[in-house]
Image: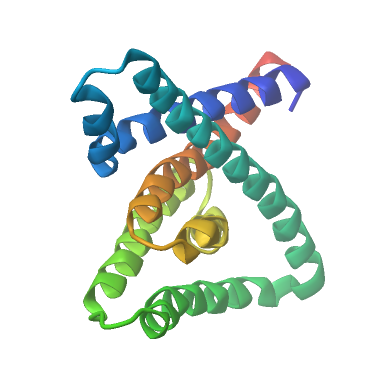
Length: 199
């Protein structure tokens, strides 16, 4: 892939992260907007919009760093584990889902386990959908690596928000993060196909 396509991927992912975080902030940070709208404070509102957009850009950069790390890890895993790489990925996927449920539940105080189960299963179901699309558009061998990326790498990227107090930033981060990861994963082979057709 040439540098022009990498720049395109970077900028569109950056924009996606910024816009989605800003939109998500209207839902999960309503009180912050209410504070600057009653009474109306223009400069504070602009500052708030810039803050959440900038936060989205940061989430996007985290997503892109994770994506490039995944491409390296996937090649390294193929070389090191060879035919065992697929079972290793399945194990890491299962462990990550278990971790999202059990360890987060143990770390919480006076909380039921159901929100953690629903969150983990939601991530898994959405990741299965993205992996299915990736495999359908490329080949069946792409399913497990795509699922690994969407579950394991997304969760690793999500850790800072998972450690924060309160659930606002958990949701504020995961929605643009997941979207950026899915976007990069599904756009990569399209960009490669465009380059092959151009050649």
